[in-house]
Image (cartoon, rainbow, N blue to C red; front, side, top):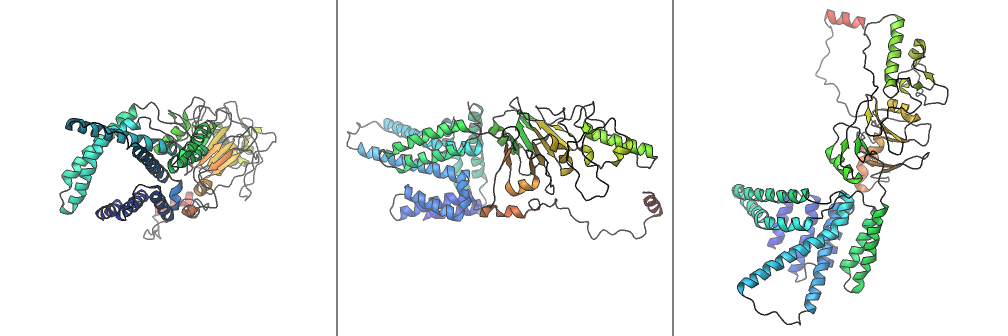
Length: 527
C-alpha cells in the first residue's frame, strides 16, 4: 500500500502526463497482484496494463512511448520466464562448494553486473526497431553506456530524488536536489562521451513492414513457452530483409508550409530558409542520411531593385518604369539574354483569374513596347513560360517572390508565398509549395503537384515522391481524412478553413482627429 501511495504521489507531482499515466498503471497492476499473492511480472498483468492504457489514451498505440515501453517490458518478462524455467530445470544439479565471504561478495557483484547487462541487451534489442522507425537512429553502445550510468542513477539520482521530495514540505530539499543534480550532470556526461564515440547513429527511414514483422517476431519470442519460440526467427529475418525496400522521399515539407528540404546531388540537405527549425532539420537529416545543411542563396543574375518616384510624371517615364519593373520581376529567374513571357493580358479590374501559361508565341521582354508592358497586369508579369536557367541543383535560389531548386532527377521544386507568384511556375515546376492558406491554384499541366498551407494544416507535414517523367508526384501527408478522434480539432484552425492569419483589429480607444492639422490636410489632398 505504501508503494501504491508513493507512485500515486509521483503521478500527481509529475503533472499526470501520458508517459507517467502509463507507468503508474503498469506499476499499480503489478503491485495489486502482489497484494493478492500473485506474480507481478507476468504477461497477464502486462496485458491488463495495455488494455487500461488503450482505454484511456487510444492514440498512444501508434506513438513511440507506448510501443517501446511495452516492447521492452514484454521482452524482459519473457526473458525472465525463460531464465526461471532453465534455473528450475538445473536445480537438481550439485551446488557449488562453499566460498569465502570475499568470494560470495564478488559472486554477487558479478551476478548484478551480468543481470544489468542482460536487461540492457534484452530491452535494447526489443526496442531497437521501434526507435529506428520513429527517430531514425540506433545506439550501438547502449550496453556500455547503461553499465556506466546505472551506478550513478542508483546511488546519486534516485535516492536523493526521493529524499528531496520527502523534504520538500519542510523546505530543506535543497541539499538533496543539489546532489541529485550533480548525479544527472554526471549521467549526461557519460551519455555524451559514448555518443561522441558511437560508430553508428542515423540509420535513415525504416519501412513500416519491418516494424510489423519485428512485432510479430517479438510476440512469438515472448509469449510462447515451448519450442514455438523458434517461430520468431523467420519473421525476424523477413524484418531485416524488408529494410532493403525502404522508399526515401524526394522532398519534405514542414507542417506550417514555410520549410522545404530535399537531398541534392552531393548528398547534402538543401533548405529554403536561412534559419530553419533545428528540430525539424535534425529529423530530416537522419531520415535522408545527410550530414550537411545547405542554406539558400540569391539568383546570380538578380537585378538591383529601383524605387519608382512617387510624384506623377509624363507618360514616357511611367511606361519605362512599368517596363523596368517587369524586367526586374522576370529577371529574378530569367537569363540576361531575356526570358520570354507568355499568356494573354487581362483587363484591369476584371474578376477573372490571371491566365495560366499558354502555348502561344511569347513576346520577348526586351522587344516589348512600353504600352504593351503597361497594359499587362502585375500578377501576370511574373509568368515565365520556360524553365529558368538559373535554377541550381545544389541549393535553393531565393528572391522576394519565390525559392526554386532543381532536384537531382531534373524536376524543379518551387516554394512561394502566394498563388500569384506560384502561377509563373506552372510552366516548368514539378512541385509547387504555397505558404498561403487562401491560395487556389490549378495548373493546366496535370503532372504538376501543388501543396498549399491549407493542405498542410489539415493533413500535417508532407513527403513527396517523384514518379516517372510525365507523371504527377505522389504526396503523402502525416494524417488522412476521415480524422481520428484525436486529430479532429485540426479542421477548425484558420489555415485549415482557408482563412488568412488573424490580425488584431485597431483599438477602439484610438480616436481619429476630426480636424487634422492644416499641413496634413494639404498633404492628403496631393496624394
